[in-house]
Amino acid sequence: MLLIGARLNWLLSHGKGKSWGSAPKKFIQIDIEPKEMDSNVEIVAPLVGDIGSCVSALLGGIDSKWAKAPSDWTGAVNAKKEANIAKMAPKLMNNASPMNYHSALGALRDVIKARPDAILVNEGANTLDLARGIIDMYQPRKRLDVGTWGVMGIGMGFAVAAAVETGKPVLAVEGDSAFGFSGMEVETICRYNLPVCVVIFNNNGIYRGTDVNPTGGADVAPMVFVKDARYDKMMEAFGGVGAHVTTPDELKRAVSAAMDSGKPTLINAVIDPAAGTESGNIGSLNPQSVVVKKK
Image (cartoon, rainbow, N blue to C red; front, side, top):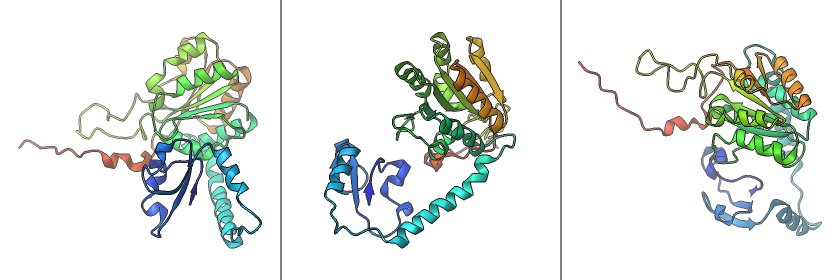
């Protein structure tokens, strides 16, 4: 198996487990960082260098005798791809309220397609995971996210830097939890009048906004935020433009207007609190506490 443009970390199950099947496998990995080789599984042919030069060298070593991939295999892969696209299409075009992640990201996908030179900044849990697979990019070096580390809090800094360095419009798609780490950078965006449109997927919580307090107390669950918070008012407080949307059509119109105007804008996109799922089932790694009830 040839690995290009990705690493065998948690995003690819570390190259192990049922995701990769039971048959023996050997990996060829192209990576610019030598320390990544053999970090999770053995790499039988490590190719250290940038993707362009390594792939060019590989292609240069392929002659006319190189066997082409079987047509039944390439056909099966293409059929699977087309089936997935057809299955996903109704989810991305759904205009119901409240929105879920797929319908909201479907609207943003169209915005980026119409503006391929815009910079996309993205962070969150479900917001990040799903955006990577739904929003296509049409030019290189236009997507900025946390990479493979899953760090939250970088979105606003990335957005400010991208706007300053490129002068291009920036669309920052933020989960409400991720935005909370550095949300006050909206003041910086307004102070320098940067062409940044921030979209916050507001589902009232981390993963979901429907969790309950496990202790049975009156307080909300630790992963539930202030219900129906209006993040758009933060941007308005510093002189920017705020918008509150509840449907994909409203979201698309608001983002398009912001990208056209170049004005600092924050859009509070209301997502169904029950729409989220735990990213990667990482909660299963948490230690389990034992609650002793008094008699």
